[in-house]
Picture: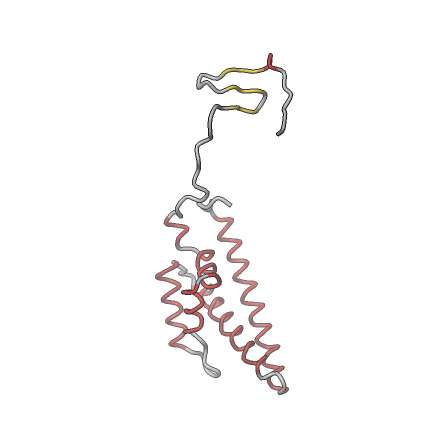
Length: 159
């Protein structure tokens, strides 16, 4: 138990019945319980932060990424359009450059993993290095965008 010594002559009684001592307010009984995180406001439900959380930390997001594996060659136009639609409809990601960075990052990461599986060949090492550079560049842009988004408004979650 902690004992706090204070000068009772400096105590001030508030109209609510609480006592104020210096800058501390001491109330009777239990403090009201606050919800640790209120429900997300609509503007925060559709955000890059929520999209990234969904992709990385939910089974549904992981299944989405696994269902959208890029082809070994070509641009994967149908896969790109499917991912864009999900980004727009579910998370409100309207910026095409950001969509491209997310998709290209996912494609590069998937191809990097495939190149690691084919590690013994010299062409796989080149592919691995190339895809690693693309992934780093795209994810750097996404992290910058995330920072911009976070600084742009007060997020409704308590951190």
